[in-house]
Structure formats: structure tokens, C-alpha cells
Image: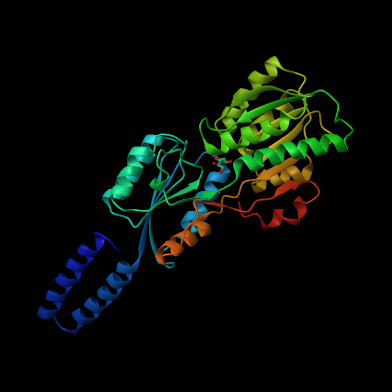
Length: 340
Ligand code: GZL
């Protein structure tokens, strides 16, 4: 472990050396093994990761991607903290990483604002910060090295363009279209981007009406609550835009309970985001019309950035991860490769 940790490791070696002077050959083996272990330990890159929570299947996959990448075998010591959906827990985790003098800080900010002070402290401690998944809104962009994640506005626009094309194919381009949107966590980049991106396309269609945009925090439970409320006020719904699959699962359950059919040839066209396997199975069966992928497998991309930093390479301010759009026509080619 580099940085402050090196001091403790050296102290351990010194103690082992003195033990060697007083012991037999068995100690020699112990000291050598310990030296190798400490030497290997000494070279590990220490990465502190603050994950925002475990709210969705997507998030679980994102966490797995980090834990599978930053292993001792790969040369890393991972310190992983789950903030359980609270920004205050993330700030505490970042401060803990700073006091442990990790080599790098990686975090997925639950919301865009409120990070300036703690990121100033990381800069003061000369610890590079990599933002994962979502984005931060800071007064000084030098407070973080780069961000690795999705183009959320692009995802939202893709959803709008898909709907435009689908309605044209269905001969419904001029029809009055009523739309409901289930939004993710307030203030999260993914929510902001998907909302703005879809609205940009929707504004180009006078016959599209967004009846309601309800916040459901990316969870199935909240989506069920909100969908019930929406259906108590609106019965003439043509399209559901749900900003992640977990919320889609809840909405589909309520729509079915209320007698609506969904998806291909259904009453309600369903547009979802994330494209986790259990949702792709509903795309294949036709209950979801289209799933806009949000790629959670960001560990390797972040490791690549760290290796570039280790080698003094120039780093861009943002790296988008590759993503697809899944419909009944193409999902069969990809679903079996989906590990999450
Ligand atoms: C997107 C990520 C979102 C996912 C949700 O990168 O921030 O948060 O779409 C997750 O599933 O909760």
C-alpha cells in the first residue's frame, strides 16, 4: 500500500527483522514470506469507492463490476463503502478515504450538488477523484479528474426518437398521444438527463402530451405507489416512459392489476431504461416495447483511467460507456450474454 500505509508496513518489516536475529531458520522462512507479502502489499494501489446504494438491479451490477475489477490479484486494495442512498454517508466515506490516504477515490454521486467542500479536501490531500455513473456539479472542475458513465441525455433522446419512429410505423404519427413518465431519484444526473433528453424530442410533437412526470426514486415499491396514484387520475394513457427497469416492474404490475395490457399490441406502449436481463425477458415476450441500455459495467473503464494516471497519460474530462437499444427484433441476439 503506497502513501501513509508504507510507514506501517516498514515498521512491520523492521520488527520481523529483529525477531529473525533472535530466532532459528523457521523464522527466516516466516520473515521472507512476510517480506514478500508486505512487498506485494506495498505495491497495491489503494482505491476508495463510495457506492450510493443498492436501489436497483442496475446498481448491484455496477457494484459487482467494481468489486470484480479492483482485486488484489489485479494489484489493488479496494475499500468499498455503500452509502445506502444518503449523500451524508457518501461524504463521510470520502472523508474516511482521505484520512486513510488512499491512492484514488471513486464515487457514484447520488445527486449532482453538495460535493464542493469534501472534494476540496480530497484535492488538498492530493488524492485524484474519479466520478462514476452520475455527475457532480462543482464550482471548480479541477476538483475531479474525470467522469466515467452514460450519456443520459442521449438515452432520453433515443427514447423519444424510438417513440417517434414506432408511432409512424403504427400509422399513429398524427394521433393525440398521452404520456406518463416515472422519474428516478430527484437531482440525479440519470434522472435529469433522461428527462431533458426525452422532453427535447417530445416538444417537437404538438400531438404528444406528457400528462404527468412522477418521481419514483428508481425503486419498484415507489413506482407501484406512484402508478396507482396516476391511474386514479388518468385512464387514457398511450405511453409509459419509466426511467429504470425496477420502476417498470412495479408499473407493469399495477397496470395489469387495473386491466391494462402493455407492450407490443398492448393498450400502453412501454419504454424502459437500464436493460437488465429480467427486463430484456419482458422485451422478448413483448410486454416492454423498448429498453434503452444503461451500461453498469464501468469497473474496467475506471481501472483503465487509473492505469493511464499511473503512467502519466493525459486524461479526458468524461468517458462514455457503450450502450445499445433493445427491442423484440434484436433482443434475442444479446439476452443470453446478459450476466445481470
Ligand atoms: C444510471 C444510474 C441509475 C440507473 C438506475 O447510470 O444512475 O441509477 O438507471 C439506478 O437503475 O438506480
